[in-house]
Image 1 (cartoon, helix red, strand yellow):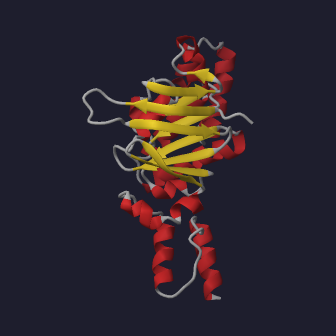
Image 2 (spheres, rainbow, N blue to C red):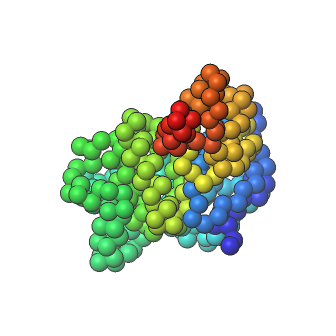
Image 3 (cartoon, one colour):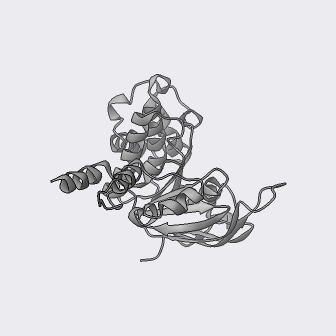
Amino acid sequence: MDPIIRIKNLTYTYPDAPGPALDGVDLDVAPGTFVAVLGSNGSGKSTLAKHLNAILLPQAGKVLVDGMDTIDEGSLLPIRRKVGMVFQNPDNQIVANVVEDDVAFAPENLGVEPREIRRRVDEALRQVGMYDFRLHAPHLLSGGQKQRVAIAGVLAMGPEVLVLDEPTAMLDPRGRREVVGTVERLCREKGITVLLITHHMDEAVRADRVLIMDKGHIVMDGTPAEVFARADELRALSLTVPDTTALIEKLNAAGMALPLSALTPEACAAAIKEALS
């Protein structure tokens, strides 16, 4: 199966920056996968995200979305319909005074006919668990609920790829769980390709694949178990590890022999229970 995202030798430097934000990045993303992209501030995560639907264009190299080159002006609208973007602050993406009107905004501007808009709005709100709030005012919602409405607004455009650029940075732990659970479900149940840009290690443990970025390069690429087993290397990059990994490290230092691959809370609890029994 051909990759839905293909990046070759992508290089990008911001004006007056001392060096490139992206420096010869290569990446293929298979359809229907959940990819988490991690890295410290300035590592290139957000710059990479903005190249995926042509907010930024390559200065060198290529970004192909389902075979379409982002630098081709004639492909701009099809690319942006195929790749939906969700950003840090949901208030910046909410434009209407009623939830369902906000979700309808993008398909209306795409010229979708009214009956199809109604169907898309209802389906998108159900997919993110916000259908019962469709007549609410967005400003009265919690941060996690607002972000799910923002995701629904993107879903109403019918994307095949969902790129989320630190969508939980402004949320409390409950809101973070709501949003990450929503995007994981969209990937698993709807087959939407998800790229989650984050600096929260715990958000990456359920991904299919984890990328670690540093100084404009992808320096690690593997399953969550493979990447988080390299805890010392992550700390050398000024990154942390998931809470479960940190706990297992402490228990192993005290004499237990728990697998570092037990990344989710459920797997970690089960490993501890088995060791104690």
